[in-house]
Image (cartoon, rainbow, N blue to C red):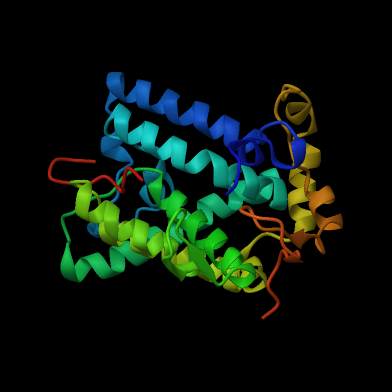
Length: 266
């Protein structure tokens, strides 16, 4: 079983910069919403499929403090690790792209089945990362053994089981919002190099970092900014299991308004 320290300080490094900043930003937006009701302009419904602002921003809106806390606790660990493996700016782009792709899938499907049901919350990102890491782990350990029992099931299905349990026991969550986010995570885990084709090239990200160098230097030393150049040099780095020491594998696989729902409190 993994240790929290492995998630919060990957490879013994300080917490990742984007992950830390995002947590602070989510809490700031939640407080701001108490004054200006900004959630109304960020939540996403299928009728708003062409609203790029909502497609990008719906993960930032949270309808309650409990909703926010559950999502932050679920997100911070896997996002910390992902950022340490892929770079800070790269991870920011991935978060935006996965939010848009998940939102588009939700809206296209929802036009037929739930046209007036809105979603909000960062749990979509949680399930995308759960899908990504569960696929990577499944290559190393195809079956997950439940602690203190003789039961086991396919590792890649662990987040799907979690999705079903949350949908049953937590009222008001969006099964389809979580489901599409999970599918996006599975795809990135299985076809990461294919997904990279819609990402900005490394040289563009490096140029962005050069332009933002003065701001990057202002980042406190107790968080870690992962530069694209360092990630490029580590492109052949190996993926190691988060749960148990195993032979490493390649990191990249070559082969809410009224009546709405929160995206989840996983």
